[in-house]
Image 1 (cartoon, rainbow, N blue to C red):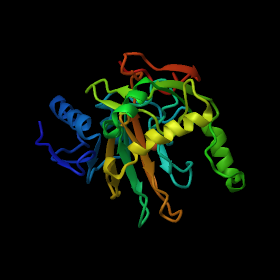
Image 2 (cartoon, protein in one colour):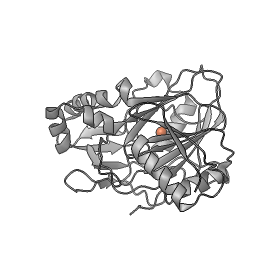
Image 3 (cartoon, rainbow, N blue to C red):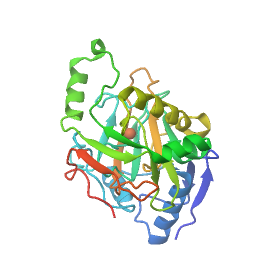
Length: 298
Ligand SMILES: [Fe+2]
């Protein structure tokens, strides 16, 4: 086993990992150590990695089976598990979300690797939804514990119609070419640590049993705890960097502050389990089959 060094970036989220070359095959002890670090710090930063798409997929595979690139968006040519997160191609990700929560079993972990970086801006924010849950005052925590939310990829992204050009309209049509709706517990129990986290984010559109208007208020109220500055890692990208984050207990946001300059990250995600709430009840699918996209992790 290598001598892994773990250096915290902030008190509540993020660690920098050194002493391990993730471009090489990893032994079991190293993977266990990385998994432990991920459980604790939620987001791990690896500097100076010498990886191509193949290598990124191989690294991610240490943590479980991979998903394909996306349920509705095509992969990088020749790399079926790699989603290009491209400022010139994808829809903007400058909204808080957890990846692909509209399917029954969203990815358990995501890796992002820097490909093209703008000269300034383009940071990724990653928030600990576990810290958010712990920050809730007792009455709000008790309320959150009882709630379920419906997540969907098909909602109004709040972009005024006149700002949608033909290219954006086509991307949106592709993104929603299959409509997914899934009910998840608002408080999810992490299967490895037992830790509780707020499992909401941008795809959560409706609290089960409440009107759209009531849902918005409750979701906004809870989301405010996720996006507290203390709960956020603001990651400034460097060339040849990979960030691995726990998609079960974080949210993230790509800041649109680089004047439309080229920015590209390649994403590979690890297939996840079906979320479980604090009473042991599992999420359930309302619409949309994602079996072409992801196996279900045990
Ligand atoms: Fe994302």
